[in-house]
Image 1 (cartoon, rainbow, N blue to C red):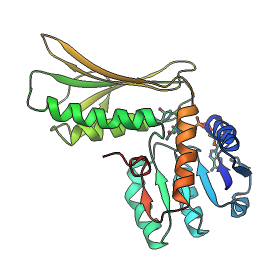
Image 2: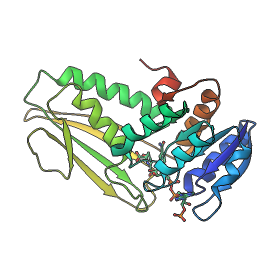
Image 3: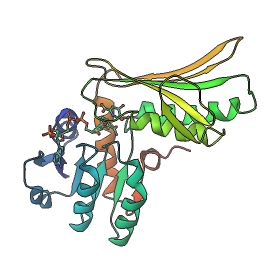
Length: 234
Ligand SMILES: NC(=O)C1=CN([C@@H]2O[C@H](COP(=O)(O)OP(=O)(O)OC[C@H]3O[C@@H](n4cnc5c(N)ncnc54)[C@H](OP(=O)(O)O)[C@@H]3O)[C@@H](O)[C@H]2O)C=CC1
Ligand SMILES: O=C(O)C1=N[C@H](C(=O)O)C[C@H](O)C1
């Protein structure tokens, strides 16, 4: 498969290594100052850039008729606009706040735990995410997806940054610490005890392997998907 890397930073470079290991050709690597036109050499585009670039990049790929895997976070508010655009172009997109198998299992665990905890009002739920200091968005996209999972089973229909409790809002403590690849934990706390689930990424390889698997999968599908569809998780 011929892959175009849109964004050649920490993730783009990790994806290149993984893609080559899986027998693919990386035909172009596009940075912020490079011409995007070069993506037309590819069968599929993998986009990991920055929150302010993702939407226009996705639209450009849809205009070119190229399937795109997008891992960039921080553009949730534009998801509906992007969905409408891709639909109108009959385009193909896989987007996910986190492409690792471990986190996608963690997403399911989080939803199941939220369902189990829902009747027990004595527990307060909160979240913590820790990432490297270069990260541009807060909270992380993964934390937002976890918050959406909890919102399905509770009246916590929004989130806020910090540790203070606010009504109908989930506190997310976003910490930035040098070199941390991505740690997420969900805590349920009562006077009697605490319950915690946690995922710790040891490297970026899990995100990159997931993105390449999504690129392989997307060439055989048409429409808009998330990693849950790719992994066929229930
Ligand atoms: N979904 C997932 O599984 C994961 C998602 N991410 C997300 O992916 C994104 C990228 O992460 P990461 O690789 O660590 O970040 P980096 O900053 O290391 O790399 C991003 C690269 O994209 C470049 N870039 C920015 N805008 C454009 C553009 N318009 N066209 C081409 N290149 C551009 C940047 O250039 P410059 O430096 O010049 O700005 C930079 O080199 C983030 O949003 C992050 O949250 C990260 C890991 C996993
Ligand atoms: O910026 C990162 O590094 C990461 N971003 C994603 C997010 O915002 O959730 C995924 C992962 O945690 C690493």
